[in-house]
Amino acid sequence: MARIIIVIMLLIGVAAGGLLYYQQVYAYYEEVGYSDDAVQLTAVATDMPEPLSVNDFEAIDATSSPLRYRACFQTDLALADLIQTYETVTFAEPRVAPRWFDCFDAGQIGTDLRGDVVAFMGVENIEYGIDRIVAIYPDGRGYAWHQINACGEVVFDGNRPPEDCPPIPESTQ
Image 1 (cartoon, rainbow, N blue to C red):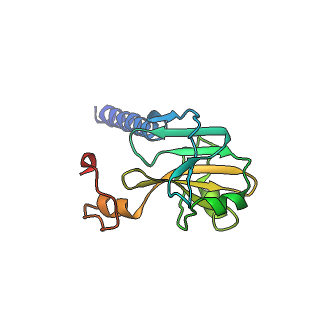
Image 2: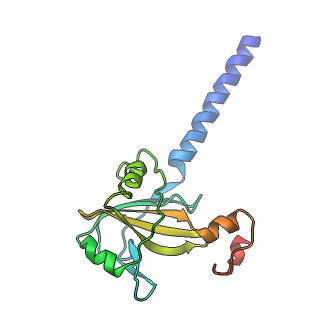
Image 3: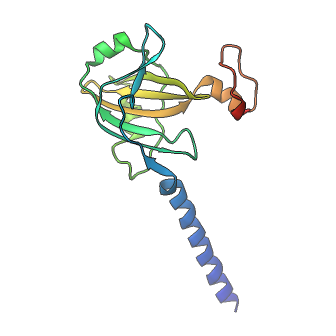
């Protein structure tokens, strides 16, 4: 009898583990469709996001977390022109994507950011405390993801935001 109970408990554990894995890797993600403003960069002159001309756009997102956004695309615009026109960021850390979204390799992008790949501010505070970062390679390949900004780190830890942060929306308080 004890063996039967042990086998049942093991089967339940395996089933629960499989369900948890499925939920983390597949269940909440949805493909994001292309729109004219699918990729935006913040202009130095206006401090406002502007649409970037792209093709071969692929993206995923999930409502379960604002950090689950990932995108891959191609642009024909010259990297030197983008650097002069749009705001670059010094700290960009790509988030790991699910293995099945194979166009986005966070480890490789992170390594390449130490070389000739440039990270730009896509949209600051796309959600409170979350920025959309866009990395572009010299050959026109581009990637986008969400990461927590300085205001978000402080607020999400339960502290008051510094004075230079925007007001906290009531829905996040």
